[in-house]
Image 1 (cartoon, helix red, strand yellow):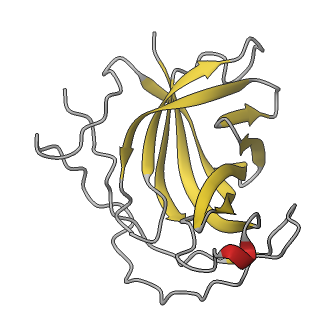
Image 2: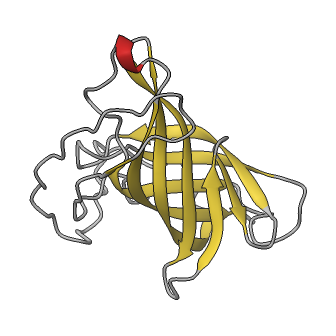
Amino acid sequence: MILPTLALALALQTPNQLPAQASPKAAPQVPAKAPAQAAPAHPPAQTSASDSEDTIPSSAHPIQTVSGRGVQIYACTKGSWVFQAPEATLVDTQTGSPVGTHGAGPTWTWKDGSSVKGEVAQKVPSPDADSIPWLLLRAKPASQPGALASVVWVRRSDTRGGTAPTSGCDAGHEGTTTRVRYTATYTFYTEP
């Protein structure tokens, strides 16, 4: 069975730069880019064999979908912005209430203390070149019982923003960090 592709086109936003933190020097401001044209919010799923297909087994089913709102952190290293970690709040898409956090590892931690660590199984470019890729990750739950204890897959989709700056990392800024705003949808899956 072919599941919907990761590469759905979504409404686009331009990422915003936040001031550098935890760095001996401040990172330079990166000029904002012009907003791209918006695509339909929910186009029909593609199912042709030529599309990038999910590797989630058909027996898996989603148990929770949340919005991640935060930053992707990059460090200026030898002339390039190098990804360090995400830092985001997970928000219930129905109530708008915070339900957990997303951080280095990558890990997702629920408000009940349960957590999972992900390992990338598939990476697909975002439909928006100015946004971080969509990911499918194998999840390894920690031993803490709770909402995420049975999660075996995590999907990151609907990304907006979060890409590394294209300038401002030179010898004068070596060792600085910058935080680039992003949003994404995270869907957690279990299997019987």
